[in-house]
Picture 1 (cartoon, one colour):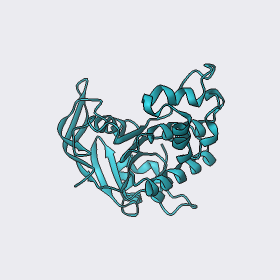
Picture 2 (cartoon, rainbow, N blue to C red; picture 1 turned 60 degrees about the horizontal axis):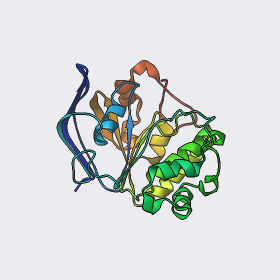
Picture 3 (tube, rainbow, N blue to C red; picture 1 turned 180 degrees about the horizontal axis):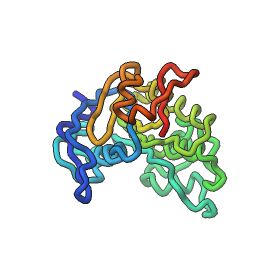
Picture 4 (cartoon, rainbow, N blue to C red; picture 1 turned 90 degrees about the vertical axis):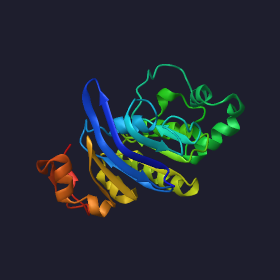
Length: 242
């Protein structure tokens, strides 16, 4: 049975049709990447799967309605802006979002070790790089051992080195923790390297398939506009100007 099943999904917000007639399945163990232009409805789709916005159609997540499988689903949002002058540590952050039974250094360190951040427990949040902070957030998302991990542009604002580290950790976690992953990314190299399925979203489902099937000049041109697609000499797939 699919981990996620969507049939005839429609989302209308303030009289704007954001998503129209989307249908797809996601099987256990997949890494599914959502791609598409800015404003195409990718984040709206994520919010729908999380149970945060109303919709029409049929959506099943982990055998239940969106929002029901708490603990079985982890979420890493886009870049979080916060006041870096607030004197909070990583430990403080984790304590705010974990249950009382798990509020101890042993549990915190175990979560952070999963994402290569075990040495950050006593660091002030304001002293972390964006890549370090995103790894802490991913560690927090994993603290209840979810089956499904949803990430919305998790490496936005992270430098290239930090981005490479982040996705290598995610790929390792997918295998070791037996995760199913849904990922929004504008980086087609990440999509090409890690995805098992690609969903092309531009208010409707424009295309879906394996990375090598989807990341072609013709398909990307349909999704982003042909003027946005160009050949990159160092990549095995076309690139897109956003």
